[in-house]
Amino acid sequence: MNIKKNRWNEPAASDITDYDVYLKRRDFLAGGAALALGSVSGLALAKEAPAIPSPTWTDLVSSNLSIDEKKTSFRDVTTYNNFYEFGTGKDSPARNAVGFPDNSQPWKIVVEGECDNPGSYGYDDFIKPYPLEERIYRMRCVEGWSMVIPWVGFSLSDVLKQAKPNSKAKFVEFTTLYDPDIMIKRNVLDWPYTEGLRIDEAMNPLTMLAVGLYGQELLGQNGAPIRLVVPWKYGFKSIKSIVGIRFVEEMPQSAWMKAGPTEYGFYSNVNPDVPHPRWSQSRERRIGELRKRKTLMFNGYADHVASLYEGMDLVKNF
Ligand SMILES: Nc1nc2c(c(=O)[nH]1)N[C@H]1C(S)=C(S)[C@@H](COP(=O)(O)O)O[C@H]1N2
Ligand SMILES: [Mo]
Image: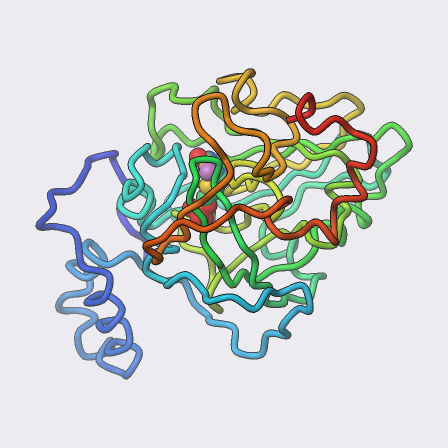
């Protein structure tokens, strides 16, 4: 079903369906009531309930990269978000990205730059070659909160190898869609949102492209249909809704580096010993918990990634 274009109207509180109610209704509809109700109230339902894309994956292999920590609730993962293209409030993306990306143009991902096998792919063709698995990762936002999220996806390295980077490919730059018809029109950041990784960071097995979470396709607010997840770096490196992957020779400038060069560096590795200029990074609030917990070096992934930064000054290269 096609949902009407989101015209960037903040809905009244009374229009917002409580997520629990919404999930119950979804189960109810899945039980066959959809057929009976469809023609009568389909429009009303589409308006109040964000459509959860189907199908749901049921046969996912669990990765040995997963951590064994309590998962953040589906509700929190899908209603407490940063996705500035859909507004700067934590609850703005869940409200303003309803229907995204179906309400935009058909999804296309361009792989280009310093590689022997560039290409432009529709979303389905892009992900088809890669077996999906579930990976439960920590995510630590630079703002001082964290979550544990069961992602669905595959290693970015699978895609990069397929593109055959040449010897000039030292970095990889990623770009988010910017569609002013459905996204914020203010220049909160220099759109489109971009991010970058060094090629060895991009090739690390932990670095993944996610297409789902909690066993179902990503919702708009989480970066549908495909986003990066780099669990040892602050969350803003995990760029959402990717339309471009480019191999480059020089270190790319990310949208956040342009916005605040003294506050947001290229590396942005989680590091409890390197404070943000305006706040400490030594502790974090795990969403759903009351007491703060200690932030771990490389967000607890030092065994996997510390060797990438051997001999580097992690204060200078923040
Ligand atoms: N395109 C884009 N990607 C983005 C952001 C954004 O505003 N725009 N926010 C980042 C930040 S600050 C965080 S913490 C994570 C949040 O991901 P989540 O909402 O799925 O938990 O997405 C990152 N990716
Ligand atoms: Mo973040």
